[in-house]
Amino acid sequence: MSVNKEVKRITTNTLQKMKVNGERISMITAYDYSFARLFDEAGVDTILVGDSASNVMAGHETTLPITLDQMIYHASSVIRGVNRSLVVVDLPFGTYQGNSKEALASAVRIMKETGAHAVKIEGGEEILESVKRILAAGIPVMGHLGLTPQSIYKFGTYTVRAKEEAEANKLRRDALILQEAGCFGLVLEKIPAALAKEVSESLAIPTIGIGAGKHCDGQVLVMHDLLGINTEFKPRFLRQYLNLHEQITGAVKNYVKDVKSRDFPNEQEQY
Ligand code: KIV
Image 1 (cartoon, rainbow, N blue to C red):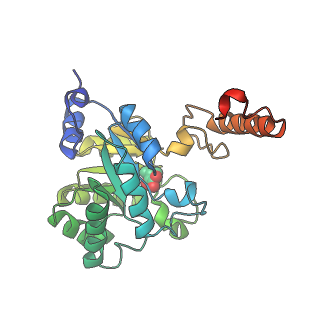
Image 2 (cartoon, rainbow, N blue to C red):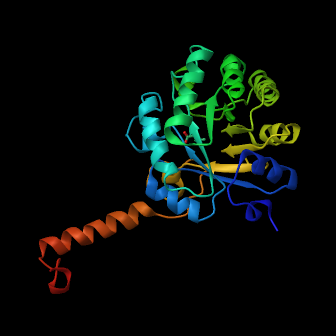
């Protein structure tokens, strides 16, 4: 029997056991109660309240504008829909990079005001002090290396990271530093599969990949991409499991047609 089916509530400890047993970890983003409930019922191991909410929920071009209050609103809605999955919440841009005291205050607000189980932070050595201070308060931290979208204006592009040896070496070092600090897991975003394999095998903590190949200990996708809500976003790493864009626009077109033609509501659909 898989580790995941034996447990009632997934914890960071469960993820660790899954890595040891070679059982892959599934993660999906969610930003509201209804979808979180569906994903939890479908048996996903962990739900990420990603700052991708800035893109897919608010329509911003980058993840930078979303605020801590907005992340808290999304995370507390998600938590109300979840019984079993581990819920991880992104600390948004500007709430942890400045100093570790501010980082701790942001993480404490997320834990206190949402009931979430862990936070995720982008970056390596540069944010180590913040990571350590949050961990010292007993808050589980997930790291995030490779393409870190909060640094998009530094990178200038969303292409694959760590293709050059210098950047790959920094990523190897950062992964070890984050593990030694006590992070319970690591997201690896858009890096070569061979590098992700090497890092995943060298770490005791689980890696969760997005565009990082099949050797990560788990995978994460943004719900809107996986469900085909945003059909214009088609990176090579994405597997689209539904075409909700087509299904929803089709359904709403039918609704509009029925209202215009006075077919809806009919005799049975009124009081
Ligand atoms: O915000 C997000 O959705 C993320 C994932 C892409 C890992 O950080």
